Image (cartoon, rainbow, N blue to C red; front, side, top):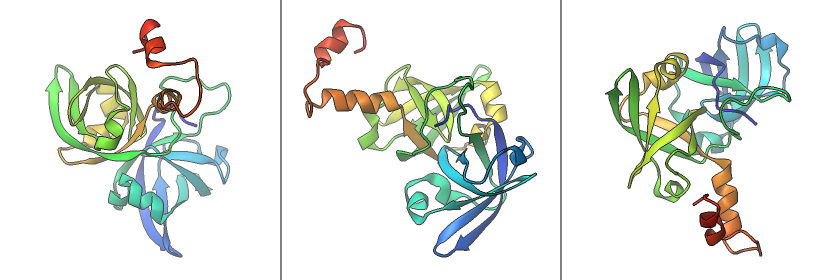
Length: 213
């Protein structure tokens, strides 16, 4: 489990084939890597990966073909920067929202515009996942917990403050960039509760009455 608060930005040092899969070598001076253990989970651009080797300068992680097929990690090249977050530890502050590191879909940056000192991004979301987006709700983009400003017919708009642009790879985004999207876990549970598959006291009318819809 993660929070969507990026702890460091790393660089892809090497991408190597490994028995049909890929192995990523990630380098970063932003975290004390030798304090972690082999087997620990690390979010790389919002994708939960397992550290298989650690050094003072970074870590190695295996990436399955399935993960490459369903995430934007397939776009990575040597020298690319990536967002990094170690798994949440008991007692850590939860500054963003609960993030699983299981990417739902790949979005596309459709526009990038200045908005005072911030940047407004329009992200196209695949149709099957737009129903999980809500104005002022949460979304995770490349591992970054963000608030949705607006929902449109094709996706969402988010506002990036200068600090977030400075400490994540979001400052590198350009029109056409592919990004990993993880929807808010709460929206998935609400969909399940409201689906009618199981008897529940929670209904759409109940949600409206109590100010949740």
